[in-house]
Image (cartoon, rainbow, N blue to C red; front, side, top):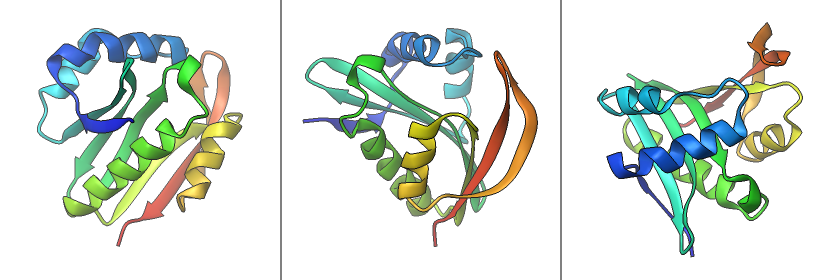
Length: 146
């Protein structure tokens, strides 16, 4: 059984490990610590019997928000933890008054694109050569929460 909950300071090292294993342009542990200090940032983790399995970062801005990051530990992917986290963060953002959520995803990341499409996200733009390691376009996705 997995549970999504707000991240604690004690979770940040596990989050950083997942981040560095998941992304070539990874955030540092300091970036997560600094982000946690801002009242507009929502960092959540998904935890099961084996510990922290993934995390998400959402930036709240009035009636809009942005999913800045979502990752699941590589050996635990494919079991629905990403869907669980995404559903939880969508519900929380809506409960906090957000009307729309945006995110960026690598154009080649088919698994993530499929997940987001399954939850009603659609492409609204493209940032050419947005990612640097390796160079790749970012797709901008949007979903209404109202």
